[in-house]
Length: 258
Length: 299
Image (cartoon, rainbow over all chains, first blue to last red):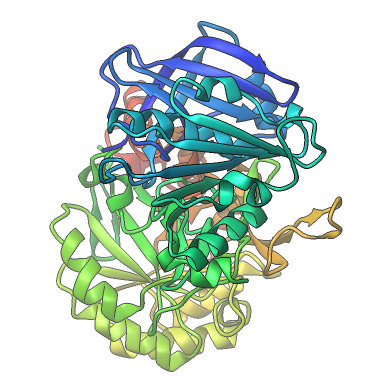
Protein backbone atom coordinates (compact mmCIF):
# COMPACT_ATOMS: atom_id res chain seq x y z
CA UNK A 1 0.00 0.00 0.00
CA UNK A 2 1.23 3.48 -0.95
CA UNK A 3 -0.26 6.93 -0.48
CA UNK A 4 0.14 10.57 -1.45
CA UNK A 5 0.21 12.63 1.73
CA UNK A 6 1.03 16.12 2.99
CA UNK A 7 3.49 15.83 5.87
CA UNK A 8 4.34 18.76 8.17
CA UNK A 9 7.96 19.65 8.80
CA UNK A 10 8.75 19.12 12.49
CA UNK A 11 12.47 19.73 12.30
CA UNK A 12 14.89 21.00 9.70
CA UNK A 13 18.50 20.74 10.78
CA UNK A 14 21.66 21.42 8.78
CA UNK A 15 24.18 18.54 9.08
CA UNK A 16 27.45 19.99 7.87
CA UNK A 17 27.70 22.03 4.70
CA UNK A 18 26.21 19.51 2.30
CA UNK A 19 23.36 17.84 4.15
CA UNK A 20 20.10 18.67 5.86
CA UNK A 21 18.03 16.43 8.13
CA UNK A 22 14.25 16.85 7.73
CA UNK A 23 11.85 15.27 10.20
CA UNK A 24 8.28 15.09 8.95
CA UNK A 25 5.05 14.49 10.85
CA UNK A 26 2.28 12.50 9.21
CA UNK A 27 -0.51 13.85 11.41
CA UNK A 28 -2.65 10.71 11.05
CA UNK A 29 -1.89 7.04 10.72
CA UNK A 30 1.34 6.65 8.80
CA UNK A 31 1.67 3.60 6.55
CA UNK A 32 4.28 1.03 7.66
CA UNK A 33 7.75 1.61 6.21
CA UNK A 34 10.67 -0.79 5.87
CA UNK A 35 14.38 0.16 6.07
CA UNK A 36 15.72 0.78 2.57
CA UNK A 37 12.44 2.14 1.19
CA UNK A 38 12.23 5.69 -0.14
CA UNK A 39 9.81 8.54 -0.69
CA UNK A 40 9.17 10.80 -3.69
CA UNK A 41 9.10 14.41 -2.53
CA UNK A 42 7.32 17.17 -4.39
CA UNK A 43 9.42 20.34 -4.44
CA UNK A 44 7.19 23.40 -4.56
CA UNK A 45 8.19 26.90 -5.54
CA UNK A 46 11.18 26.01 -7.68
CA UNK A 47 10.73 26.61 -11.38
CA UNK A 48 13.64 24.37 -12.37
CA UNK A 49 11.99 21.36 -10.74
CA UNK A 50 8.95 19.52 -12.05
CA UNK A 51 9.57 15.89 -11.14
CA UNK A 52 9.52 14.61 -7.59
CA UNK A 53 12.83 13.88 -5.89
CA UNK A 54 13.44 10.32 -4.66
CA UNK A 55 14.92 10.40 -1.15
CA UNK A 56 15.61 7.40 1.04
CA UNK A 57 14.10 7.02 4.48
CA UNK A 58 16.78 7.81 7.06
CA UNK A 59 14.66 7.07 10.09
CA UNK A 60 11.04 6.43 10.97
CA UNK A 61 8.97 6.33 14.12
CA UNK A 62 5.70 4.51 13.48
CA UNK A 63 4.29 5.40 16.91
CA UNK A 64 4.84 9.14 16.51
CA UNK A 65 4.05 8.97 12.80
CA UNK A 66 7.30 10.60 11.73
CA UNK A 67 9.73 10.07 8.88
CA UNK A 68 13.24 11.48 8.78
CA UNK A 69 15.06 12.23 5.53
CA UNK A 70 18.76 12.92 5.14
CA UNK A 71 18.98 15.18 2.10
CA UNK A 72 22.24 15.82 0.29
CA UNK A 73 22.18 19.26 -1.29
CA UNK A 74 23.14 18.61 -4.91
CA UNK A 75 20.88 20.70 -7.14
CA UNK A 76 17.95 23.11 -7.34
CA UNK A 77 15.42 20.71 -5.85
CA UNK A 78 17.45 19.58 -2.86
CA UNK A 79 18.58 23.16 -2.19
CA UNK A 80 14.96 24.24 -2.01
CA UNK A 81 14.25 21.36 0.41
CA UNK A 82 17.13 22.53 2.59
CA UNK A 83 15.49 25.97 2.83
CA UNK A 84 12.18 24.65 4.12
CA UNK A 85 10.94 25.81 7.52
CA UNK A 86 9.31 24.06 10.46
CA UNK A 87 5.54 23.98 9.98
CA UNK A 88 5.66 23.98 6.16
CA UNK A 89 3.97 21.15 4.26
CA UNK A 90 5.80 18.64 2.13
CA UNK A 91 3.90 16.33 -0.20
CA UNK A 92 5.22 12.76 -0.34
CA UNK A 93 4.40 9.62 -2.26
CA UNK A 94 5.46 6.80 0.08
CA UNK A 95 6.56 4.17 0.98
CA UNK A 96 8.26 3.15 -2.26
CA UNK A 97 10.41 0.24 -3.36
CA UNK A 98 11.68 -2.94 -1.75
CA UNK A 99 13.76 -2.52 1.38
CA UNK A 100 16.51 -4.49 3.10
CA UNK A 101 16.08 -7.98 4.55
CA UNK A 102 16.00 -7.63 8.31
CA UNK A 103 14.98 -11.20 9.19
CA UNK A 104 18.32 -12.63 10.29
CA UNK A 105 19.16 -15.64 12.49
CA UNK A 106 20.03 -14.69 16.10
CA UNK A 107 23.64 -13.62 16.67
CA UNK A 108 24.19 -12.91 12.97
CA UNK A 109 27.14 -10.66 12.26
CA UNK A 110 25.96 -7.81 10.06
CA UNK A 111 28.09 -5.14 8.39
CA UNK A 112 26.55 -1.98 6.97
CA UNK A 113 28.76 -0.09 4.50
CA UNK A 114 27.74 3.43 3.56
CA UNK A 115 29.31 6.20 1.51
CA UNK A 116 28.18 9.80 1.10
CA UNK A 117 24.40 10.19 0.97
CA UNK A 118 24.23 6.38 0.91
CA UNK A 119 24.60 6.52 4.67
CA UNK A 120 20.96 7.64 4.88
CA UNK A 121 19.03 4.33 4.85
CA UNK A 122 21.53 2.59 7.13
CA UNK A 123 20.33 4.34 10.30
CA UNK A 124 16.80 2.94 10.20
CA UNK A 125 18.31 -0.40 9.16
CA UNK A 126 20.63 -0.37 12.22
CA UNK A 127 17.63 0.30 14.46
CA UNK A 128 15.57 -2.45 12.84
CA UNK A 129 18.42 -4.95 13.28
CA UNK A 130 18.67 -3.78 16.89
CA UNK A 131 15.05 -4.77 17.50
CA UNK A 132 16.01 -8.29 16.33
CA UNK A 133 18.69 -8.36 19.00
CA UNK A 134 21.63 -7.67 16.65
CA UNK A 135 24.22 -4.97 17.07
CA UNK A 136 25.58 -4.39 13.58
CA UNK A 137 28.86 -2.82 12.63
CA UNK A 138 28.53 0.30 10.48
CA UNK A 139 31.40 1.32 8.22
CA UNK A 140 31.03 4.83 6.84
CA UNK A 141 33.20 6.28 4.11
CA UNK A 142 33.75 9.65 2.50
CA UNK A 143 36.39 11.80 0.86
CA UNK A 144 36.75 13.85 4.06
CA UNK A 145 35.29 13.77 7.60
CA UNK A 146 33.08 16.71 6.58
CA UNK A 147 31.38 14.51 4.01
CA UNK A 148 30.31 11.89 6.56
CA UNK A 149 27.29 13.45 8.25
CA UNK A 150 25.26 12.18 11.21
CA UNK A 151 27.72 9.44 12.20
CA UNK A 152 26.95 10.06 15.89
CA UNK A 153 23.30 9.12 15.26
CA UNK A 154 24.43 5.52 14.67
CA UNK A 155 26.27 5.10 17.95
CA UNK A 156 23.32 3.90 20.10
CA UNK A 157 22.57 1.12 17.59
CA UNK A 158 25.84 0.06 16.05
CA UNK A 159 29.59 -0.09 16.33
CA UNK A 160 30.73 2.72 14.05
CA UNK A 161 33.93 2.60 11.95
CA UNK A 162 35.01 5.36 9.57
CA UNK A 163 37.27 5.54 6.54
CA UNK A 164 38.20 8.79 4.78
CA UNK A 165 40.22 9.26 1.60
CA UNK A 166 42.28 12.04 3.20
CA UNK A 167 42.60 10.42 6.64
CA UNK A 168 40.82 13.35 8.33
CA UNK A 169 38.81 10.83 10.34
CA UNK A 170 39.25 7.11 11.03
CA UNK A 171 41.15 4.86 8.66
CA UNK A 172 42.86 6.58 5.73
CA UNK A 173 41.66 4.96 2.52
CA UNK A 174 38.60 3.31 1.02
CA UNK A 175 35.96 1.51 3.07
CA UNK A 176 36.96 -1.81 1.50
CA UNK A 177 40.52 -1.22 2.77
CA UNK A 178 39.36 -0.69 6.36
CA UNK A 179 40.53 -3.60 8.61
CA UNK A 180 36.95 -4.10 9.83
CA UNK A 181 35.77 -4.78 6.29
CA UNK A 182 37.81 -7.97 5.96
CA UNK A 183 36.44 -9.62 9.10
CA UNK A 184 33.90 -12.44 8.76
CA UNK A 185 30.20 -11.53 8.48
CA UNK A 186 26.92 -13.29 7.79
CA UNK A 187 25.46 -10.36 5.89
CA UNK A 188 26.73 -7.15 4.31
CA UNK A 189 24.40 -4.30 3.39
CA UNK A 190 25.70 -1.41 1.32
CA UNK A 191 24.51 1.91 -0.05
CA UNK A 192 26.61 4.66 -1.60
CA UNK A 193 28.54 5.53 -4.75
CA UNK A 194 28.33 2.82 -7.42
CA UNK A 195 32.11 2.04 -7.54
CA UNK A 196 32.09 1.56 -3.75
CA UNK A 197 29.06 -0.73 -3.83
CA UNK A 198 30.52 -2.78 -6.69
CA UNK A 199 33.78 -3.24 -4.74
CA UNK A 200 31.82 -4.29 -1.65
CA UNK A 201 29.66 -6.68 -3.70
CA UNK A 202 32.67 -8.27 -5.45
CA UNK A 203 34.41 -8.86 -2.13
CA UNK A 204 31.26 -10.26 -0.51
CA UNK A 205 30.72 -12.59 -3.46
CA UNK A 206 34.31 -13.84 -3.30
CA UNK A 207 34.03 -14.48 0.43
CA UNK A 208 30.62 -16.14 0.08
CA UNK A 209 28.89 -13.54 2.25
CA UNK A 210 25.28 -12.69 1.54
CA UNK A 211 25.05 -9.06 0.42
CA UNK A 212 22.36 -6.53 -0.43
CA UNK A 213 23.05 -3.32 -2.36
CA UNK A 214 20.79 -0.27 -2.46
CA UNK A 215 20.95 1.52 -5.82
CA UNK A 216 20.21 5.11 -6.68
CA UNK A 217 19.35 5.78 -10.32
CA UNK A 218 17.77 8.78 -12.01
CA UNK A 219 14.06 8.32 -11.61
CA UNK A 220 10.84 9.85 -12.84
CA UNK A 221 7.71 8.09 -11.48
CA UNK A 222 9.11 6.09 -8.53
CA UNK A 223 6.39 3.43 -8.88
CA UNK A 224 7.51 1.25 -11.80
CA UNK A 225 5.45 2.93 -14.51
CA UNK A 226 7.95 4.83 -16.65
CA UNK A 227 10.84 2.34 -16.72
CA UNK A 228 13.43 5.15 -16.71
CA UNK A 229 15.48 4.03 -13.68
CA UNK A 230 16.44 0.54 -14.80
CA UNK A 231 19.60 -1.26 -13.76
CA UNK A 232 21.24 -4.27 -15.37
CA UNK A 233 20.56 -7.47 -13.44
CA UNK A 234 21.17 -11.11 -14.30
CA UNK A 235 17.50 -11.24 -15.38
CA UNK A 236 17.80 -8.15 -17.62
CA UNK A 237 16.66 -4.62 -16.92
CA UNK A 238 14.83 -4.13 -13.62
CA UNK A 239 13.36 -0.94 -12.15
CA UNK A 240 15.37 0.45 -9.25
CA UNK A 241 12.20 2.15 -7.95
CA UNK A 242 9.98 -0.92 -7.84
CA UNK A 243 12.13 -4.07 -8.04
CA UNK A 244 14.74 -2.31 -5.86
CA UNK A 245 16.24 -0.06 -4.67
CA UNK A 246 17.61 -2.97 -2.64
CA UNK A 247 18.86 -5.95 -4.64
CA UNK A 248 20.49 -9.17 -3.44
CA UNK A 249 23.83 -9.48 -5.24
CA UNK A 250 23.05 -13.11 -6.13
CA UNK A 251 20.96 -11.60 -8.98
CA UNK A 252 23.44 -8.83 -9.79
CA UNK A 253 26.61 -10.50 -11.11
CA UNK A 254 26.32 -8.71 -14.43
CA UNK A 255 26.08 -5.41 -12.55
CA UNK A 256 28.98 -5.74 -10.10
CA UNK A 257 31.38 -7.51 -12.45
CA UNK A 258 31.54 -4.64 -14.91
CA UNK B 1 -22.28 15.21 -18.82
CA UNK B 2 -18.69 14.13 -19.57
CA UNK B 3 -19.21 11.07 -21.75
CA UNK B 4 -17.70 11.04 -25.24
CA UNK B 5 -17.31 8.54 -28.09
CA UNK B 6 -14.19 7.55 -29.99
CA UNK B 7 -15.47 5.42 -32.87
CA UNK B 8 -17.04 2.41 -31.09
CA UNK B 9 -15.63 3.24 -27.68
CA UNK B 10 -17.86 4.87 -25.11
CA UNK B 11 -15.81 6.83 -22.60
CA UNK B 12 -17.27 7.90 -19.22
CA UNK B 13 -15.23 11.03 -19.58
CA UNK B 14 -12.57 12.28 -22.00
CA UNK B 15 -9.66 11.52 -19.64
CA UNK B 16 -7.31 8.71 -20.61
CA UNK B 17 -3.67 8.10 -19.77
CA UNK B 18 -0.77 8.05 -22.21
CA UNK B 19 1.16 4.92 -23.09
CA UNK B 20 4.46 4.50 -21.28
CA UNK B 21 3.49 6.78 -18.41
CA UNK B 22 0.93 4.59 -16.71
CA UNK B 23 2.44 1.09 -16.77
CA UNK B 24 -0.44 -1.40 -16.89
CA UNK B 25 -2.64 0.74 -14.65
CA UNK B 26 -1.97 -1.45 -11.62
CA UNK B 27 0.91 0.77 -10.53
CA UNK B 28 -1.64 3.53 -9.87
CA UNK B 29 -4.31 1.45 -8.12
CA UNK B 30 -3.24 2.67 -4.65
CA UNK B 31 -3.77 6.29 -5.68
CA UNK B 32 -6.86 6.39 -7.88
CA UNK B 33 -9.98 4.44 -8.79
CA UNK B 34 -8.98 3.20 -12.24
CA UNK B 35 -12.65 2.67 -13.10
CA UNK B 36 -13.17 6.44 -13.07
CA UNK B 37 -10.90 6.87 -16.10
CA UNK B 38 -12.33 7.25 -19.58
CA UNK B 39 -9.69 4.72 -20.54
CA UNK B 40 -6.02 3.96 -20.29
CA UNK B 41 -3.37 3.06 -22.82
CA UNK B 42 -1.02 0.35 -21.64
CA UNK B 43 2.72 0.34 -22.27
CA UNK B 44 3.91 -0.13 -25.87
CA UNK B 45 3.77 -3.83 -26.70
CA UNK B 46 5.92 -5.56 -29.31
CA UNK B 47 6.04 -9.02 -30.88
CA UNK B 48 8.96 -10.20 -28.78
CA UNK B 49 10.20 -9.05 -25.35
CA UNK B 50 12.46 -6.00 -25.46
CA UNK B 51 15.06 -4.83 -22.97
CA UNK B 52 14.93 -1.21 -24.17
CA UNK B 53 17.87 1.19 -24.21
CA UNK B 54 20.71 1.24 -21.65
CA UNK B 55 20.58 3.55 -18.62
CA UNK B 56 20.56 6.59 -18.30
CA UNK B 57 17.20 6.91 -20.01
CA UNK B 58 15.80 10.18 -18.72
CA UNK B 59 16.73 13.71 -17.84
CA UNK B 60 14.62 16.51 -16.43
CA UNK B 61 14.53 19.63 -18.63
CA UNK B 62 12.77 22.99 -18.17
CA UNK B 63 9.06 22.20 -17.61
CA UNK B 64 9.51 18.73 -18.98
CA UNK B 65 11.67 15.67 -19.37
CA UNK B 66 13.45 13.69 -22.05
CA UNK B 67 13.18 9.93 -22.10
CA UNK B 68 14.75 7.23 -24.22
CA UNK B 69 13.29 4.07 -22.69
CA UNK B 70 13.15 2.38 -26.09
CA UNK B 71 9.99 0.27 -25.78
CA UNK B 72 11.08 -2.02 -22.96
CA UNK B 73 8.25 -4.52 -22.55
CA UNK B 74 7.61 -8.20 -21.94
CA UNK B 75 6.21 -8.86 -25.43
CA UNK B 76 2.68 -9.55 -26.64
CA UNK B 77 2.52 -13.14 -25.39
CA UNK B 78 3.29 -12.11 -21.82
CA UNK B 79 0.68 -9.38 -22.08
CA UNK B 80 -2.02 -11.77 -23.31
CA UNK B 81 -1.31 -14.63 -20.92
CA UNK B 82 -0.32 -12.70 -17.80
CA UNK B 83 -0.92 -8.94 -17.58
CA UNK B 84 -4.29 -9.02 -19.35
CA UNK B 85 -5.78 -11.37 -16.78
CA UNK B 86 -4.77 -9.06 -13.95
CA UNK B 87 -6.47 -5.99 -15.46
CA UNK B 88 -9.36 -7.35 -17.56
CA UNK B 89 -11.90 -6.91 -14.73
CA UNK B 90 -11.50 -3.11 -14.79
CA UNK B 91 -14.59 -1.16 -15.80
CA UNK B 92 -12.83 1.19 -18.21
CA UNK B 93 -11.50 1.11 -21.76
CA UNK B 94 -8.22 -0.77 -21.88
CA UNK B 95 -6.31 0.18 -25.02
CA UNK B 96 -3.05 -1.52 -25.94
CA UNK B 97 -0.31 0.53 -27.58
CA UNK B 98 1.10 -1.65 -30.38
CA UNK B 99 4.65 -1.22 -31.65
CA UNK B 100 7.01 -3.05 -33.95
CA UNK B 101 10.07 -2.93 -36.20
CA UNK B 102 8.27 -4.23 -39.27
CA UNK B 103 4.79 -4.27 -40.79
CA UNK B 104 4.65 -8.01 -40.05
CA UNK B 105 5.36 -7.40 -36.37
CA UNK B 106 2.70 -4.69 -36.08
CA UNK B 107 0.15 -6.99 -37.73
CA UNK B 108 1.04 -10.00 -35.62
CA UNK B 109 0.74 -8.05 -32.35
CA UNK B 110 -2.52 -6.44 -33.47
CA UNK B 111 -4.01 -9.85 -34.33
CA UNK B 112 -3.11 -11.30 -30.96
CA UNK B 113 -4.53 -8.29 -29.11
CA UNK B 114 -7.72 -8.46 -31.22
CA UNK B 115 -8.50 -11.81 -29.60
CA UNK B 116 -8.70 -10.22 -26.13
CA UNK B 117 -12.35 -9.61 -25.35
CA UNK B 118 -11.79 -6.78 -22.86
CA UNK B 119 -9.49 -4.75 -25.11
CA UNK B 120 -11.77 -2.80 -27.47
CA UNK B 121 -9.03 -0.82 -29.23
CA UNK B 122 -5.36 -0.57 -30.07
CA UNK B 123 -3.24 2.51 -30.44
CA UNK B 124 -0.78 1.92 -33.26
CA UNK B 125 2.53 3.52 -32.31
CA UNK B 126 4.14 4.75 -35.52
CA UNK B 127 5.89 7.52 -33.66
CA UNK B 128 8.34 6.19 -31.05
CA UNK B 129 11.50 8.28 -31.42
CA UNK B 130 13.68 5.97 -29.32
CA UNK B 131 14.09 2.80 -31.36
CA UNK B 132 16.44 2.18 -34.27
CA UNK B 133 14.07 0.22 -36.52
CA UNK B 134 10.44 1.01 -37.10
CA UNK B 135 8.83 3.34 -34.61
CA UNK B 136 8.99 6.90 -35.81
CA UNK B 137 10.28 6.01 -39.27
CA UNK B 138 6.78 4.68 -40.07
CA UNK B 139 5.16 7.84 -38.84
CA UNK B 140 7.15 10.55 -40.58
CA UNK B 141 6.30 9.63 -44.15
CA UNK B 142 2.67 9.61 -45.37
CA UNK B 143 3.18 6.61 -47.69
CA UNK B 144 4.92 4.51 -45.02
CA UNK B 145 2.27 5.46 -42.46
CA UNK B 146 -0.51 4.49 -44.86
CA UNK B 147 1.23 1.18 -45.64
CA UNK B 148 1.49 0.04 -42.03
CA UNK B 149 -1.99 1.28 -41.09
CA UNK B 150 -3.67 -0.38 -44.05
CA UNK B 151 -1.87 -3.67 -43.31
CA UNK B 152 -3.01 -3.58 -39.68
CA UNK B 153 -6.51 -2.52 -40.74
CA UNK B 154 -6.84 -5.77 -42.71
CA UNK B 155 -6.18 -7.91 -39.63
CA UNK B 156 -7.67 -5.75 -36.86
CA UNK B 157 -11.45 -5.34 -36.84
CA UNK B 158 -11.90 -3.27 -33.65
CA UNK B 159 -11.22 0.42 -33.01
CA UNK B 160 -7.89 1.39 -34.54
CA UNK B 161 -6.26 4.52 -33.15
CA UNK B 162 -3.00 5.70 -34.76
CA UNK B 163 -0.53 7.67 -32.63
CA UNK B 164 1.21 10.38 -34.62
CA UNK B 165 4.67 11.88 -34.36
CA UNK B 166 5.11 15.65 -34.05
CA UNK B 167 8.56 15.35 -35.67
CA UNK B 168 7.21 16.17 -39.14
CA UNK B 169 6.65 19.27 -41.22
CA UNK B 170 2.96 18.64 -41.89
CA UNK B 171 1.21 16.46 -39.34
CA UNK B 172 -2.19 16.96 -40.96
CA UNK B 173 -0.91 15.26 -44.10
CA UNK B 174 0.07 12.13 -42.11
CA UNK B 175 -3.29 12.20 -40.29
CA UNK B 176 -5.16 12.33 -43.59
CA UNK B 177 -3.03 9.53 -45.03
CA UNK B 178 -3.93 7.17 -42.16
CA UNK B 179 -7.59 8.24 -42.17
CA UNK B 180 -7.77 7.37 -45.87
CA UNK B 181 -6.66 3.78 -45.23
CA UNK B 182 -9.09 3.13 -42.42
CA UNK B 183 -7.80 4.52 -39.11
CA UNK B 184 -10.76 5.09 -36.75
CA UNK B 185 -9.02 7.79 -34.72
CA UNK B 186 -5.67 9.51 -34.35
CA UNK B 187 -3.88 10.43 -31.12
CA UNK B 188 -1.25 13.15 -30.96
CA UNK B 189 1.34 14.16 -30.10
CA UNK B 190 4.01 11.61 -29.25
CA UNK B 191 7.20 13.13 -27.84
CA UNK B 192 9.30 15.74 -29.61
CA UNK B 193 12.80 14.57 -30.43
CA UNK B 194 15.28 16.35 -28.17
CA UNK B 195 18.72 16.19 -26.59
CA UNK B 196 20.53 17.44 -23.48
CA UNK B 197 24.24 17.71 -22.70
CA UNK B 198 26.12 17.39 -19.40
CA UNK B 199 28.68 20.16 -19.82
CA UNK B 200 30.79 19.12 -16.82
CA UNK B 201 31.32 15.63 -18.25
CA UNK B 202 31.14 16.92 -21.84
CA UNK B 203 28.78 14.22 -23.02
CA UNK B 204 25.09 13.64 -23.74
CA UNK B 205 22.95 13.15 -20.65
CA UNK B 206 21.31 10.01 -22.02
CA UNK B 207 22.97 6.83 -23.23
CA UNK B 208 20.90 6.91 -26.42
CA UNK B 209 22.01 10.55 -26.96
CA UNK B 210 18.58 11.76 -28.12
CA UNK B 211 15.20 11.23 -26.51
CA UNK B 212 11.58 12.29 -26.53
CA UNK B 213 10.53 15.53 -24.85
CA UNK B 214 7.30 15.52 -22.86
CA UNK B 215 5.63 17.56 -20.14
CA UNK B 216 4.23 21.11 -19.98
CA UNK B 217 7.03 22.36 -22.28
CA UNK B 218 5.42 20.67 -25.30
CA UNK B 219 1.82 21.69 -24.64
CA UNK B 220 1.55 24.70 -26.98
CA UNK B 221 3.02 22.65 -29.84
CA UNK B 222 0.57 19.85 -29.11
CA UNK B 223 -2.44 22.17 -28.95
CA UNK B 224 -1.46 23.69 -32.31
CA UNK B 225 -1.04 20.27 -33.94
CA UNK B 226 -4.34 18.94 -32.58
CA UNK B 227 -6.05 22.05 -33.94
CA UNK B 228 -4.47 21.51 -37.39
CA UNK B 229 -5.33 17.80 -37.49
CA UNK B 230 -8.89 18.26 -36.16
CA UNK B 231 -9.57 20.61 -39.06
CA UNK B 232 -8.07 18.22 -41.60
CA UNK B 233 -9.74 14.90 -40.74
CA UNK B 234 -13.26 13.76 -39.89
CA UNK B 235 -12.30 10.92 -37.51
CA UNK B 236 -12.08 11.68 -33.75
CA UNK B 237 -8.81 13.13 -32.50
CA UNK B 238 -7.28 12.29 -29.11
CA UNK B 239 -5.07 15.10 -27.80
CA UNK B 240 -2.06 14.76 -25.58
CA UNK B 241 1.12 16.61 -24.71
CA UNK B 242 1.79 18.35 -21.41
CA UNK B 243 -1.66 18.10 -19.87
CA UNK B 244 -1.62 18.44 -16.09
CA UNK B 245 -4.90 20.18 -15.25
CA UNK B 246 -8.52 20.42 -16.35
CA UNK B 247 -7.73 23.76 -18.00
CA UNK B 248 -5.03 22.10 -20.08
CA UNK B 249 -7.46 19.35 -21.08
CA UNK B 250 -10.08 21.94 -22.03
CA UNK B 251 -7.63 23.66 -24.39
CA UNK B 252 -7.28 20.40 -26.29
CA UNK B 253 -11.04 19.76 -26.33
CA UNK B 254 -11.77 23.26 -27.62
CA UNK B 255 -9.32 22.91 -30.51
CA UNK B 256 -10.95 19.66 -31.56
CA UNK B 257 -9.85 16.73 -29.40
CA UNK B 258 -12.71 14.40 -28.45
CA UNK B 259 -10.63 12.92 -25.63
CA UNK B 260 -7.26 13.57 -24.03
CA UNK B 261 -4.42 11.55 -22.58
CA UNK B 262 -2.41 12.49 -19.53
CA UNK B 263 1.21 11.40 -19.52
CA UNK B 264 4.17 12.93 -17.73
CA UNK B 265 1.90 14.59 -15.13
CA UNK B 266 1.21 11.11 -13.71
CA UNK B 267 4.83 11.09 -12.49
CA UNK B 268 4.41 14.37 -10.63
CA UNK B 269 1.01 13.56 -9.15
CA UNK B 270 -0.14 9.94 -9.43
CA UNK B 271 -3.72 11.14 -8.75
CA UNK B 272 -3.71 13.91 -11.38
CA UNK B 273 -6.21 12.12 -13.64
CA UNK B 274 -8.94 12.27 -10.99
CA UNK B 275 -8.30 15.97 -10.48
CA UNK B 276 -8.69 16.55 -14.21
CA UNK B 277 -11.98 14.58 -14.28
CA UNK B 278 -13.29 16.55 -11.28
CA UNK B 279 -12.07 19.80 -12.82
CA UNK B 280 -13.86 19.12 -16.12
CA UNK B 281 -17.08 18.43 -14.25
CA UNK B 282 -16.71 21.62 -12.21
CA UNK B 283 -16.03 23.61 -15.40
CA UNK B 284 -19.16 22.26 -17.07
CA UNK B 285 -21.27 23.13 -14.02
CA UNK B 286 -19.76 26.58 -13.78
CA UNK B 287 -20.46 27.30 -17.46
CA UNK B 288 -23.87 25.64 -17.60
CA UNK B 289 -22.65 22.96 -20.04
CA UNK B 290 -24.84 19.84 -19.96
CA UNK B 291 -22.78 17.86 -22.46
CA UNK B 292 -19.03 18.27 -22.86
CA UNK B 293 -19.39 17.59 -26.60
CA UNK B 294 -20.81 21.14 -26.83
CA UNK B 295 -17.32 22.59 -26.44
CA UNK B 296 -15.35 20.07 -28.49
CA UNK B 297 -13.87 21.75 -31.55
CA UNK B 298 -15.37 25.18 -30.95
CA UNK B 299 -12.11 26.81 -32.06
